[in-house]
Length: 261
Image (tube, rainbow, N blue to C red; front, side, top):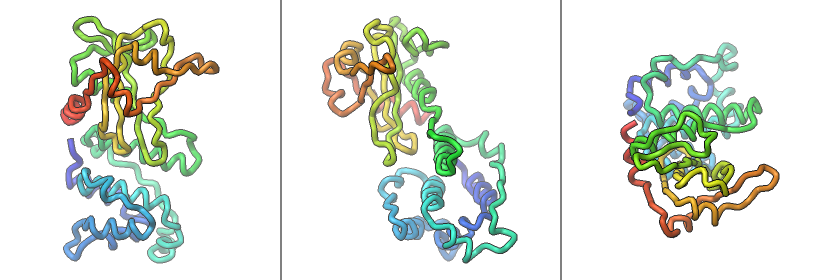
């Protein structure tokens, strides 16, 4: 599922009156009025952003949105408010996203938008974290890829079961330049063997699957580190995990699943 050119244009119209976009848009458009990625990354490089290789797998509209949001956070306001703002436009007016854009956007597009909103709220000190619906998305990907049945309540220590009755605890991590950690969320009751396998996936900052694995409980028990004050176990999904006996690399399967949702 992709954002259509019409949806991108609607998004630009919603934000066209902001001083920042009135400053940026003329710099990233060619003589024909079309988005010119070379110009976009030329502007980005002036502010120390080297994102062309990082975002080149995305479509042009997504690259414009992501790089634009990064620039919005780091470009001093006086650089664009003085040059393009008038007394009527110097203060940004809040314009809600059109419901039809949200309803028709792809899953990945919505996740990216969610993360950008949370980043902005954290920058403004409205929230203290950038929590995202990553866990639910990871569970959906594994269930789609392998036909697992998701549990209604994970308090029993696992999130899904397969046709043979094997139990899976599903974990995920979004790895970003801001936070490159691969530590998964806390694992509870590890010695109780409430699951048979750990299914884990790593995402990049644009919610693209980068690595995924299914591990036997024994590997998790041996590698997990007890954290006394939280009564839980810490598990880091480093590259060495893929060499463990019984480890199954399922990256390709989850990438395929992500393309069908």
